[in-house]
Figure 1 (cartoon, rainbow, N blue to C red):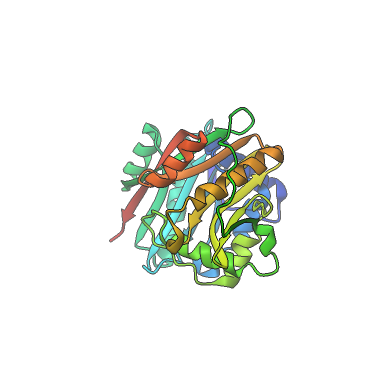
Figure 2 (cartoon, rainbow, N blue to C red):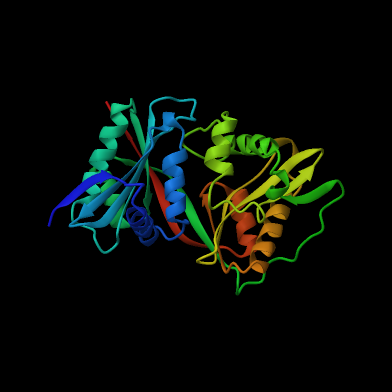
Length: 310
């Protein structure tokens, strides 16, 4: 049996669905849908040099890779590759071939420092280390049973604060872009990110097929969005993901992020979603404390591996 690596075929719906299915089996703590895979492939910034690769064995997709440059980082020459193989199709060379193809693509476009997320399991970590990658920061995946758990009661918004949904900003989402840009800069990461391209943000983020604007809650204060809890949803599986929660620097310490997230979670449960997922850097103690307060439990951990070339 022969394993080959090739680009994902966006015009072939079954190929895209196979990509999403392998990703879901290997990493079930993130929402993977064919529409979301296609959206990222077609709407990523050109400077990211984004590619989706598959490893195929006798016509079956058994491995996947998403590869890009960190184009929105102030530090040039950084690349990211995330490799996931079907759990029942490991040890067939798919991961090896995907890493080789991803590294060749990134280095051809000037990357000298490569980052990869790896599940914190012995076989996965050993694979990364065999390829010259060293362990860095870690992050937790967290899960909450929305259907069976008891959420903290809803709290009234304090004076001067109004809870809105992202849908209320449909005519002019720029204030949400500005809040997202500010909070993203403060998010724990080993790759600094600066969101400066509003039009790209519209295409890549605001129009994302998993973004649920109605369930994304925004705390509005002092004439602008002050905090938000960003909701991605997959109605077909009943899963809801908090993709980002943040507060403007000048308005932190008032409990606005917790207020927004609690509102979003209650409305998600009322809308029929049964499972809530999120992720936090292990050093992000404030958000880990908030999620523990909601009842989230850690369900898996991943490690950011890095390799510096030359």
